[in-house]
Image (tube, rainbow, N blue to C red; front, side, top):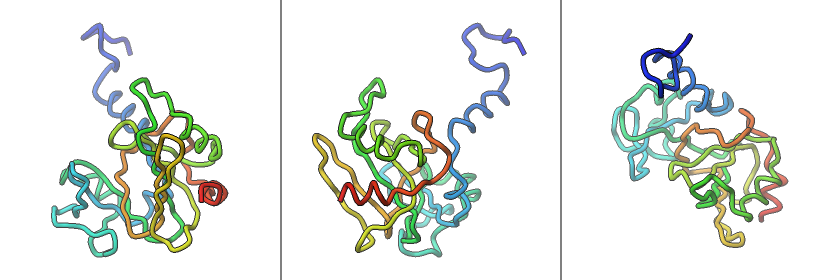
Length: 184
């Protein structure tokens, strides 16, 4: 359909804009199928879809993805890691203003390859690498890599989810155990 209303318009009608937005913010089914979603405030405080305080260790405060995505409570979504093998590698402050990846983070992404979903974090200058793996002792680790920091999480935490896929990352969770072992 030709764009006739405004020269600078990117989409022909609101339905096209909504469809493009949904496509660019697709979260893998391996996450959306689990009832481990919360809402979060701007300050990343976890809240339930109804607005009460949520907990990363209390399943009664979690929701299904559809319910959390429809809620207008707070500022966004979060996914709870409960030790079932889903992990997140949080690469802090690794993107510059042009979206170029810092060398230390590029090494992590190269190790991951095209096996797992990667999203841009809420700050816009970090990345979350989602996949499957285990951390000895469960909870999490914080490591310095060159000029940057990577945090590894598997249990007892929630991660703010943007759904903004980075680059051509696949919409699936791959095996990250080799990468985790290499980092540790």
